[in-house]
Image 1 (spheres, rainbow, N blue to C red):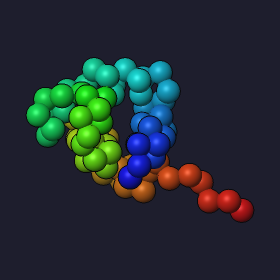
Image 2: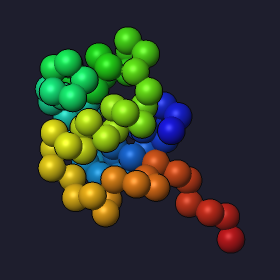
Image 3: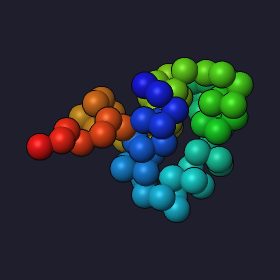
Image 4: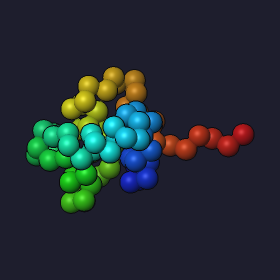
Length: 74
């Protein structure tokens, strides 16, 4: 997962406004009690941050995988 895919996944799941809040403010125990923004800034893999964010925010498992990818062109 690239950073752009992480950003798209956050917007798709949480919306643009709340997505900014949750990545800034939600504490991710799986990553040492830092925010998603802090984890990305320190170089954590976006996929690991996404999964930790999903755990912390109780995102259902079926909505965690394959997100953040652009829609296929028709």
